[in-house]
Image (cartoon, rainbow, N blue to C red):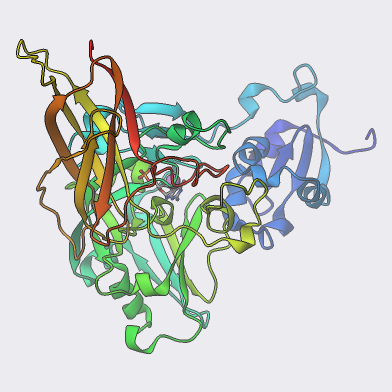
Length: 468
Ligand code: MTE
Ligand code: MO
């Protein structure tokens, strides 16, 4: 469009998130988004892109890559970048903001799946400990890590009647009793790679092995106490108080049912400490929700707002991603499936050693196996079965008696097994666990395959060779 206004990059830069008329670029076009902010479904997070290019953000929030969203933006177009500022007809690299530049440094021992955003799993060494060291706790970020000054952070609680109450961190810490809860967080996609490897069909999503799970002792105030202070009394909840929706500073959001939010034995925390240290930035500094027993996707980090509503969070992570379907469903009807909340039972082998003792006898060869087992909803692990001959014979592993805080068994149980491997040559070691409700794991992925690769909980199977 030759008649379009030509705009210098320096001009765009000055229309950043703090300006009264924020601008963004998409490609070489410039948009004044002032009037969009109020009606933008993701809220003010769009200001993160102001003063620069929106393309990198739309790569992250891929939900925007549709014609109707492009059409909305087109209404706000005010001009084109001046040719003087273009290199080979495009915006120069330096002009495109990298939202991940301010992410924290990470422990090199984490197994990184993607760097931007950071998705990294706990290495075997970290899985061997009951409390995962903070630096080895798996990281699942959908976006960048927000930069927060602790003194400036505020949490807002909105009730069904629209009334709002805000709390600084200092107020939360001073006004409510502090509690410690030991809880495992597990991503819905933990062991997804195992599902992929054992099916002829692909699964979409990060190909986690068995390390998208970790355990910590979380310290914070109880959500139910804060809600009561904000005006929600558990014994007289209004009709429309059905879900507690949580929003993070970078626009991630999720919700949990009210019954869990106010359950006196539910232990839902607004946490500011982790394993005795200040909450690390990757894990939600300065404040995150911990929903023990539920899928970790509900434990919203960098918590900025709680809304009590008659419906679930509108976010794609509540309405779409974290749901599960039957093995035949390739095009899911998202509205029909229930969002994942409490996790099903799972277990995994995290280490196998064959001490090569001279004792190898005709009875077999010594073998030691260790790992974890976990079930959602606070259901305790009561038994772990092991086979070292591909499932022909079974034995029970010894459960480690780790000490935890909390009203229920919110954390994994470590287990150990030492026995004799009777088969010579190749076979596999298998593990399956049972919880206090006598729930156990499915033998294979055949009946639980889903294209999203969620809830990959089949018996964990590791191939071994007796010569090893
Ligand atoms: N909260 C925010 N604000 N942003 C996120 O990307 N990821 C969720 C949840 N809370 C996420 C979030 C998901 S899917 C998981 S599995 C856990 O955080 C991971 O928590 P961790 O990174 O502390 O292990
Ligand atoms: Mo997750």
